[in-house]
Amino acid sequence: MNLTVSPQIRLVALAGFVAALALAAGMILLNGQRHSAAAPAAVKPVHARAGARGGTFSGGKVSTPTGTRTAAPGAPAKPVAKPPNQAVLAAVRAGLPPRVAKAFGAHRTVVLSLYAPNSQVDQLAVHEASTGAALGKATFVRIDVTRGREKELRMLASNLGALEAPAVLVFEPGAALFVRLTGFADHELVAQAALNAAS
Image (cartoon, rainbow, N blue to C red):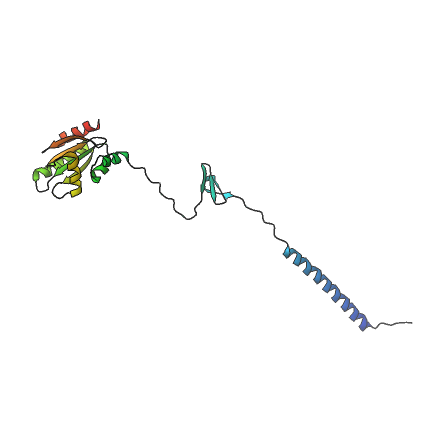
């Protein structure tokens, strides 16, 4: 039996074959993309990164050449509290008014001038006491006995007895009274008393 295939049928068969090949290639390509999308991407873990001044950051801590501390991003560093001044504490324990006690934080000795503002002699005495304190490397404090804080005056009176103006009280290290200069005292006398109290 002799079959003759017309050119039209041959062309249709060829087109069908090409279409089948294209479909198969598309399926293979699609299947390969699905597998690659399902596979997890390999990520190299980062354990540490460089920190400030040669340190490293890892797990919420910063390692530096001097040690390890907890990192607090964005939080300002808390100032370190200064230890209390022992000389000031000693003056408070001695019963001196806070204003006089704080003066021991600047120098080892304190010159306290008691005065009445309505007296020209007292005003001059305050000036001389201030100059003498500077020369004697002492802290200077003045208290108005007419308008001073009542609590301050009571504290002084309970520790030192009767108060009168003008007067200069020189305190030595440890807040003990070194000398009381009653009446007018010039700057040289006050300076010498302050220097003697410090020695």
